[in-house]
Length: 416
Image (cartoon, rainbow, N blue to C red):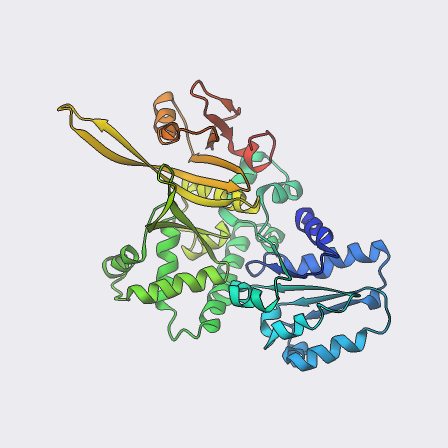
């Protein structure tokens, strides 16, 4: 199966000539190299660019190990720049090069060089590194296949396709396997030999036990608010491992740096401030999430929430978890305060949406329960419940938009 990744190809094309280093980031095996070395490469050839003006270096390839030396890499690239026509320099996994910032900055002043690099570690896009680029680094974040990308190629009955997506996620290589056993074996293998190993080696961890257990805890708790202290208590009670809060906090940073998990902060909607004591974590790919648990704890309601979160991020929204404070009078007339949760408060430029995820919405009682927090927000931004078992999308009598999960993932209705 060939996935064209048109959205990301267009981002690469539109960034040409902006005077910046194009930095393609994302979790390993999500298709960064294929995007650059195949899709973008072929696009440039079809446009008339000569092959000898495309300089491609895969730094993960053992045969290119010497090019991980920054001076050797500079000399290699320079040796290919022989005329004034435009050259397209594509470097895969640039973080393997020492002092790569200096290498990339060396080409900022060359007018006939466009530089594209990939990386699987968010650390090399930290504030300090961006400063080294002098404000001339342009990030293009790649995610695993969206459901729309997957379904466009895989096809089949819609509900079954979504179930397969919930189970095996969106890593492009997974789709090459036909049987469920093959897909699961592949996901287990790359979890162990690629993702877990990469985090351990990159951060010089002496033992993998704590990291493994942390991932199991996070995978089991998708959709649940947590914090470092609560995770530490879970380690002690469930796993019998005594690990300090500082170590857990470092592990969480390592996993986010590798694009393994993403964090949704808790936001007080009425108070318009972040609440630092609680957060949620979602997996960049739900197939890897299921592999962490060896496919033994499949809960489609939580998986659907993770998929919605990933889709919102893919659409370039910032995503928080909302909290709304409410008050009611008890039978004695006493004022009781309570907090209701909004699954996602999403923002993009001047646009805001309040979104609930509801795997099933069988009756009006459940509908009222899901929309209770939304109706406490007194503003004019759209309020949405994304529903997993609803076949028609539209507004209910309270002005809440009930959105079919398929319409959301396939962008079939104007819900934004």
